[in-house]
Image 1 (cartoon, rainbow, N blue to C red):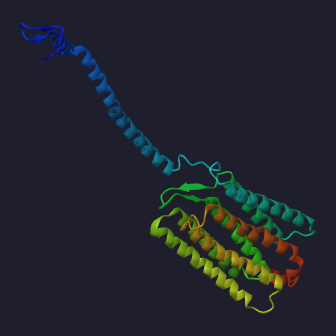
Image 2: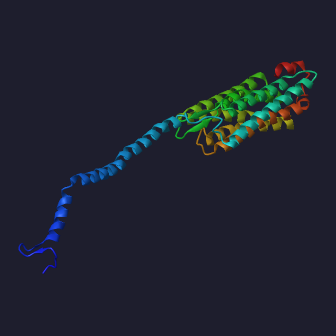
Image 3: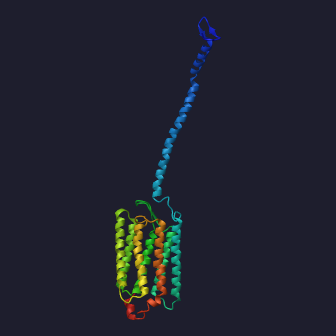
Length: 312
């Protein structure tokens, strides 16, 4: 029999168990306390659910900011230049400005001014300005319409439209070319640079067609100068200057193809470095070698009035 001190023999029940059952019944009759607990639990479960839309909204905001970055709003030059790019651009600007100053001094030291000295000074000064514009972030654009974002130095092409034709004028003086041959070379060079610039601004198949046009005119320059090299009576100085022009003319379309304008196979620092060194060679290096040997290379026929009318 159940051992219970509150056992009622008359009713056959234990009052302790009845009291416990009554206690359970009493808790079941207090819904307000459990309702509060259930509400708190529901609020805790609802918090992550409410946070999910906010988390979804954050990527949406980031996605909305991505086009702005892709459109160039988040890119600023020269702040976003790699350090090596800044150094190369500064090297180009300082090197050409120093070269221009040297040519100006050498020109003023002469008792009689010459066209070659003035041209060489001008091409170095124009090249230095172009590089300074790129160094300060003025002569650069962030192109986002291509397959990947590209950095396009449009001031480079502006500088080439001035420096390369003037370098060809100097070379024409060295080679004793007539006006028609000189104008032909300059025309080839202007079209070569202009087509490369239009290709840098284009996308898809159009830019490759512009590069093809530019390369064709570069080949015309190379072929024309190669024929001049095969001529008789050409001095070693003239041959060296001609080879400098040919090699630099070969480099420009190749760097366009491998650089940011084309396939972007080269890094930005590599592209800027190669073009900078090439520009320094065709401006400062070419000019120094020519001006320092000016009297020797221009001695033949310089005092002949007839030749002075035939040659530039």
